[in-house]
Amino acid sequence: MYEESATINKLALYFFIGLFSMFYAEIFSGASVLWFIDPWSLLVTFPLYLSHTLFFLNIALRFKRFSFSSLYLLGILFGLYETWITKVAWSGYLGTGSEYITLGGFAIIEFLIVSFFWHPIMSFIAPILTFEILCIHAHPNERELSTFIFPSHLTLLKKSTSSKILIYLIILTSSGLLAFNSGLNIIIAGATGGGTIVIILATYQFLKKKNTNFSIYNYRLSKRGSSIVIGHLIFLYLFLGLTLRPNAWPEMITIILTILIYFGIIFLLYLDLPLESRVGEDISSEGSIFSYNDIIRAYLGFLCLTIIFCLSSAIAFIFVFLTLFLYTFLAIIFLILTIVRIFKKRRYVLLNSPK
Image (cartoon, rainbow, N blue to C red; front, side):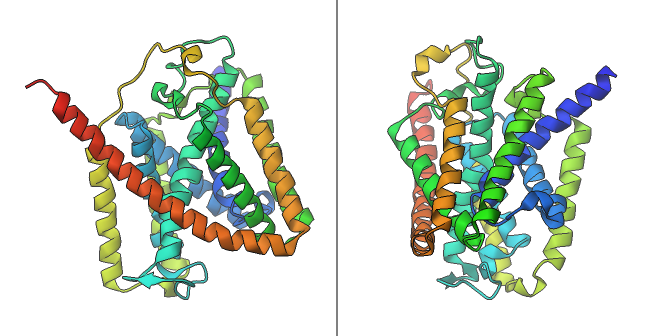
């Protein structure tokens, strides 16, 4: 009975972080409306996000790649599924080439957005940070956080001006995307956003009721678990790669360039030095960090703005148009800052290493 209960808790914990990845990636973009009653979303889309999140999070856990730079690079590898599986990075959202700019067989705007901003931040980093905030909430009397979150993430969880501005921008633009992609249907948009929030909160309460040990380290998979996740990913890439939009496959030169991008990201990941843990650091030393209540307020704000956009088609259209430019700009900025940060860190270590 105990082993069965532990297994259920473990599966619920996996489901939980998959929910965040699905919510931020697919609902914030309006790509999967009413996903919880849609067979394709339940059988394909949600498992795709869950397996990718668990796979790349386990790479971070096994190789101690906890820094923002490393997680961002792993998130890029995550986002490159938009080449082989959906072909969006190659052929645009419509599958007929980019609606904006095409270069080297890539739909440049779409490629930059999905691979260098949306998936690294929304599909991978945001779910991890959200879960860590809830870990802190689930351990209200615990002062030493290194046992259940990555200690170096205390800085990322701190309420800074830049982080708050980024969150406000994402909520504002994403609510417009959900409204627009729901056909400005207030019932569909509200049910999609509100329904997902209810599922997330219900799962969180279920896990708390079961006295689940909220720890990011609990996502470390066993050999059997790793085999299942890797096997599922191989199946997705082979089956969907061949059957989903087969006419969108590019020329060989684009495929070669895609593989070279993989090697380039992996090389940058190799160059990014593992971050030293700040074990034993007290939460009070970090000042104000994001809390459970902040998450609730953000979700409610997202839902309210979505409803407002549904009532104003002109504003929603303008926001969707401006969002493309904003996300493209953020993709370039995040990529440049990550590369600069990696080389600055290496230079600092080389200059300060013992002769």
